[in-house]
Image (cartoon, rainbow, N blue to C red; front, side):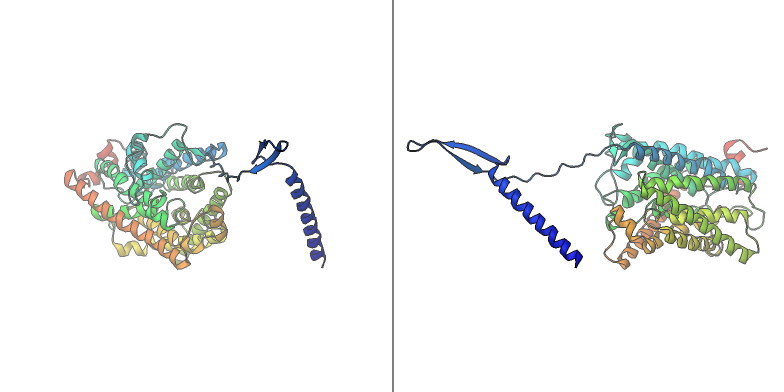
Length: 467
């Protein structure tokens, strides 16, 4: 009753106020009224009021404006993502190979940073993020043509967006090197990544992250690269491992990691750098970036925990390498979902990811019969597939709404879009990687000689070795 009386009182006050306002408005011309004086010969001059219809005024379009907070965060994130490759991944992989191949393995990561940086500014960025095609970009921004130093991409400089995305391309290529360690020619690797970035990486990036890309328009959720980076690189690595063949002595000689200290340090740097990888993909400093970092930490810890538990049950001991690998598995799984899920979803995804990726580097690896030397496929492709599909299950309606993300009309439809992105990436990356490597093998060969392999790639490919 009180709410009704209060509502009646407010209504009366508003009606009374409106009537008084209308009466006052009737006696005072508005800015849209024109006053005209009409003179006749029979009567004194009279004043007539002619009211011109008011034209609707369109709201001014919001002008993009540089945000220094967003810019500062993406500057930091860019450095963190590069840290993931050099020295992070270089140390992670370098510690897992035999002593005679440490330098060559680390050189793959260093070379990715060198060569991909050049290719990206020459043509890679343009092919990924310019043009209006659904499947491929164009060369309108080759050599960063038209990218002025003060041009904006959202609230950050476009030049910053260029290098932020460059670091993603770098680590994608470096991940592939884990599958081909100990036996691929350095010259073949350099030629391969030069072509692969342009022919494989940039189209998939365009599909998923360019506003005209077909997967982007379909509503596929890939916040930071589950398909673009992890499935893409893992599948390419598996194809390369098949084409290179198994390492000499595999299953007969010891190929145990020569220095797990380096591997743990590398994994730790990767973990820290992943905050820039996922948090930076919000492209701003705000609630979404904060949540992305939080769920990244939760998923990494959950996957490492579930990996260690399963390893303890199956093998009798929880290993240091298992802990490091489990953390990476969790980071991979949460990558496509980081900007879309809450803490509960991240926890479940991490627990599932740790178990599935452990299966990926053990049972699945045996079934595939490929010498995926450092488990690029088992960790990245398997983890990426799990993460991409589970993103369609555990996304938060609240976060999706706040981010203004458009989903498929139904839950089943969204799952299909996620699966569609996974399958398209697997097929395209696998087929194109095979073609590229086949051509290179015909031209210069892709595998070192048996003598060079036994000698070690540090000495045979680079003329150096660790004493």
